[in-house]
Length: 231
Ligand code: SF4
Ligand code: SF4
Image (cartoon, rainbow, N blue to C red; front, side, top):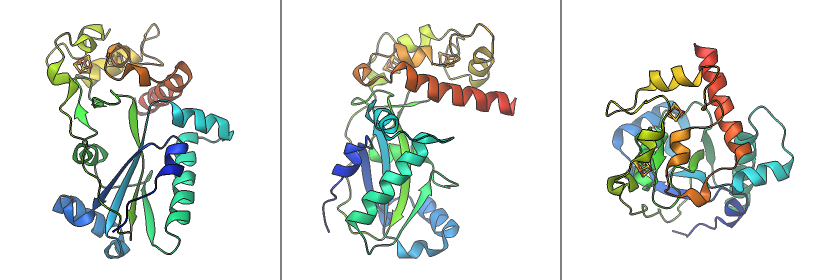
């Protein structure tokens, strides 16, 4: 069993990594993975790779990458390069981005990255909500499995819950998240959430990692476009 060298990923802004033994993941999740990915019996581990903060966005911009999904394409390329150098003779299969059956947030919970915030994004004490899942791969590696981040949800100790009162749609006023209110508001011509989430930005946890305007614009204009496409 070896300790992974994730330096190249960290340098590319893919600075969150979690290694799981497949045998230690929930049985239903593993059964689905094995059903969907025929050669999955070759694989012993699943590696979850994410980013926290702004460094990935800066790396994508510096790469000059122009494509419809520049962050996904950059992330996959960097992970392929990293894996090929580290484990040239080991099998691997990238299952996310793509049609992955495993629930990313479920993996995030097991890794200790994800606690549910009132507006349904994951939150943790280190990064606030300023992190995301980028690549998942099945691997025939024998890396030392990661220990989960041990932290309770920052929301459990948050008295102000300013995210709830700052949402201009009142999407959390009823005690749970009303997606229809959020979407309805975002689609309005005068919406303040066309290229951001006011509630998310108001949360003080991990605010030093908050994405810059350009990254927010990129992420939220994509999600608004998807909303319009399906409406
Ligand atoms: S403002 Fe408080 S309740 Fe809202 S996401 Fe941040 S920590 Fe959680
Ligand atoms: S995007 Fe806007 S409307 Fe939706 S939860 Fe965030 S603040 Fe509320």
